[in-house]
Image (cartoon, rainbow, N blue to C red):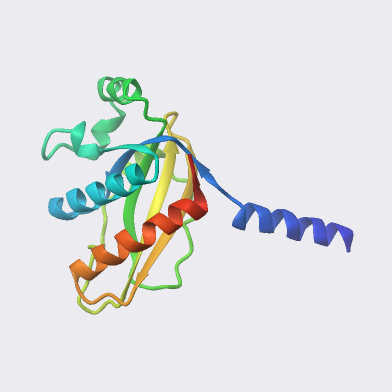
Length: 177
């Protein structure tokens, strides 16, 4: 019985007590449409800055149309390190349902950058959009994942409005500077 209680407490702490720690981040939006990528990266950067983080969008370091995979090139990594960045935040749409859990796949940063998104910020039939934030340190090791569920959406603008409203609460609850 005591062993069962210990396992339960460990599991509860590991799942519910996990804080994602970083101070400065490079935000990478994983979206097919460039306007979606820019909009989401800028919104996330702005909200992070309002909450005491130092954040930069990935398009500050890449040329227009350049592959996200180029972020791991040595020259760009040196520039990123010189800015004091200690984490990469990859933002993507997990799906259009409220029942998603954070992915448990042990994805590498390189593999994450090579993935393509099959989802857009908004889809006509959807009433809910779930965003996933995947965090990596500068050694390309997975730090953690976090989900943001935006319900009661009817168009792209309502998704953006819900994202901006709900994200500061998620940051205060699960992310730590």
